[in-house]
Length: 229
Ligand SMILES: Cc1cc2nc3c(=O)[nH]c(=O)nc-3n(C[C@H](O)[C@H](O)[C@H](O)COP(=O)(O)O)c2cc1C
Image (cartoon, rainbow, N blue to C red; front, side):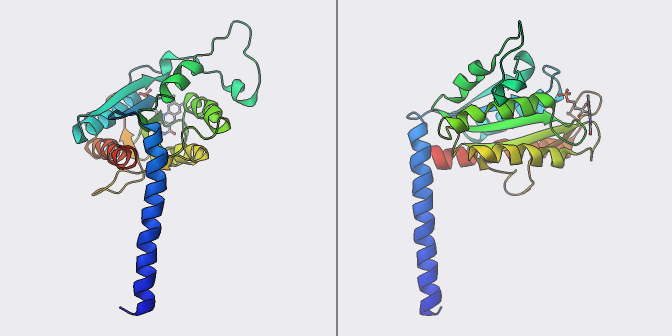
């Protein structure tokens, strides 16, 4: 190895250490001692259906990766998330806003990772998913409070190739506004995210999709531990 190449390799390693250190500092400042939590969001308006099932598979895999990781499934079908509030508009008469309750959960310093799951609606995320992500703008305004949290995306469609990858990509793009650390399904599958196929309101027979959901959960857990413990 020439001197120049050796020097460059050394500087690269030092740079990586500095970057890892900075990320680690931000991350560990957010995590309470010993507690690491991953929250999974299901954003189908249909409570407890295939999107919730897919996110549950990912969360289970995260806990299998390390049993010290706490997980919570938040089924957004249970919450009223008025989208117009993100644009500074008031609630309509009688309208309820449950987003502050969700924001409080996300502000738990132990939260090191999030998994955002959506049904595929015409090749992209559901309106509920977008309303949720838009409302997450409050974290950005408050100084990028979600910065360095690990984020993975999951999509469930009614057909095998119904736009799951487009949906995952759309979620990831929108979440990048929060300075989160986006991840895919990790080694060995190396997919963009979890892509599941709903067959008769069940994901049980979708072997490929289940592998991606488990991979995503493990990868979010792995990176959450790396950056936050
Ligand atoms: C408005 C709407 C649009 C949909 N668009 C698509 C689509 O583009 N591609 C697809 O594969 N499935 C599509 N579906 C099917 C859903 O993605 C699928 O049933 C999904 O599993 C629903 O999630 P859930 O069981 O959690 O409600 C659509 C369903 C609805 C209601």
